Image 1 (tube, rainbow, N blue to C red):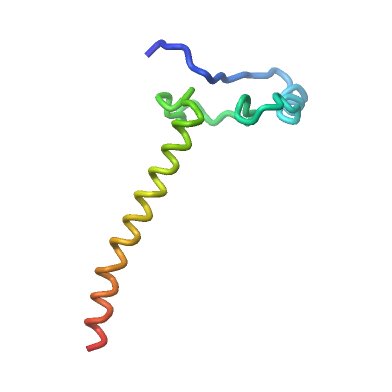
Image 2: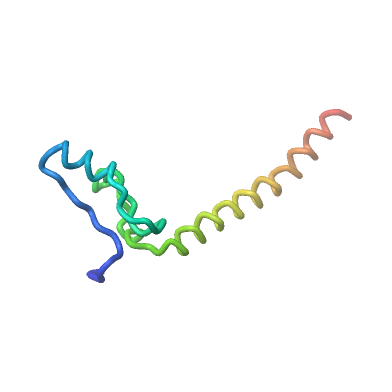
Length: 87
């Protein structure tokens, strides 16, 4: 989409520089900079790059809520079928 994002991919020419960057404390405020190895570019969902921390946490909570609802909804037919087998 061409819009600037709040994320970046950095490459290094030496492994020692990469290890130093990963071990360095980047910022005293949490979630300001997260240093980790980049995945293969084919594995990146580019629409998610640069999401705010709030959007990320909201997505995690939404998935947790939907999975919990699915689990509870699946429990009732399982209990019903199980109880029919005991008749």
